[in-house]
Image 1: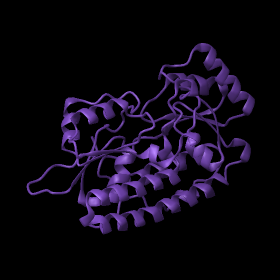
Image 2 (image 1 turned 180 degrees about the vertical axis):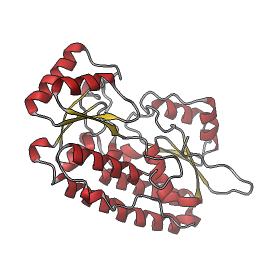
Image 3 (image 1 turned 90 degrees about the horizontal axis):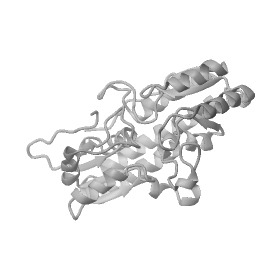
Image 4 (image 1 turned 90 degrees about the vertical axis):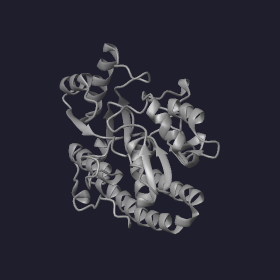
Length: 307
């Protein structure tokens, strides 16, 4: 699972239930060892199609605070939370508290006609910083005795997120301007691209998470050729034969090692953090698009909160 804290005798920690791994990682960085963290969505699981289980209902029933992404991402989990949680337990939606509806992005995998915005705010480092700040406030409200601890942890994390943001901007400048284009399997990079002046030219996966038709595949291949896109990006967690075909027939390099909801390494490893995920993604992306990953070479990624 990756983000499951055991209950021990005499444990009076704030019990926090989260969903996807990047949010769980940020919650750990802010809450440190003063929260008991339980992530509902297992690593390497499609968060859009995830269906919670009976054991998840028990986790939600015990939670003092439930923190989810929102923006229509975890509807089955939200329904279960409402049915299972205590009356005094609040459910907090990070994405809805971070941007307004006029800032929502609709795109290839999330068409406006269906009403569900792209929910992947956390890939934009500045939004991830906002997420962490919200969790600092929510943890402090629920557990005022440890408010200073949460605030100190957030301050330390914010410095590192600001540093990551600076490194990304430095890395982007090494990519030829005409190559700052992304074609991905799943459209999880829209908010990142908007922040860092990239263009998402397409996504393979449809809004119903099915594979594209032969006609759509042909259109994507023609688009890659016409725009001379040097690389197309897949997921290390969800390999796609269709993306293999698109890369082969377009002549673009296939890079199938990006992650948007699973930090690298095993749970407990130093690199198994939000920072570790972005550091790895940026290294891969910058090099594949003809830039340099030097900005990320010495980046610290391990959690470093006090006891």
